[in-house]
Length: 240
Image 1: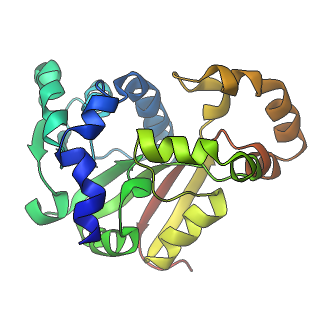
Image 2 (image 1 turned 135 degrees about the horizontal axis):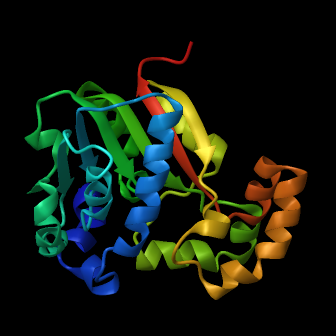
């Protein structure tokens, strides 16, 4: 099955070998963006589940903002579990396994941060996910741009190093969610082009051009030069 081929890098240790810290340095930055999203929409969830939680750093960072909430993280990769003991004090329930197979409850918020681009069949997964959360938060890298297509090497790099097999623009990401029966409430750029913790020298070199392009038109600039990510708040239900 294609799913087995795609997911094998997470099960056989290849991903952990290439990314031993599971990008945990990005976790506080992502958590801040999630909290900002919640505050904009006056959301005070009592139960939060992160699908594809990796190191668990995002949930650990959220504990300070939601001291009384039930926090749980799921990841199919056994290698990620080695980092979970670092967060024992945060009282998070971690599980190695598929969230959809292991969970029958409906939670207030499901987080899928940097996950959709890894799934062999995001349509099927998103369709089944709708029944498990009142709200969903997606963080989606916008790998697809005119520059990345022209160069191609950035797309091949994220495919090989971190397992991205789908590439999105803002419009394509929103269209995917709407096609799968979600109502998009908020879809905002995170500012990753300038604030992400692990920016490469090439990204920094592109700062002046990006600032100019973004000033003229944020959407146009992102589609032209890339570098951004999208934070989306959605809920089950067709767009009006």
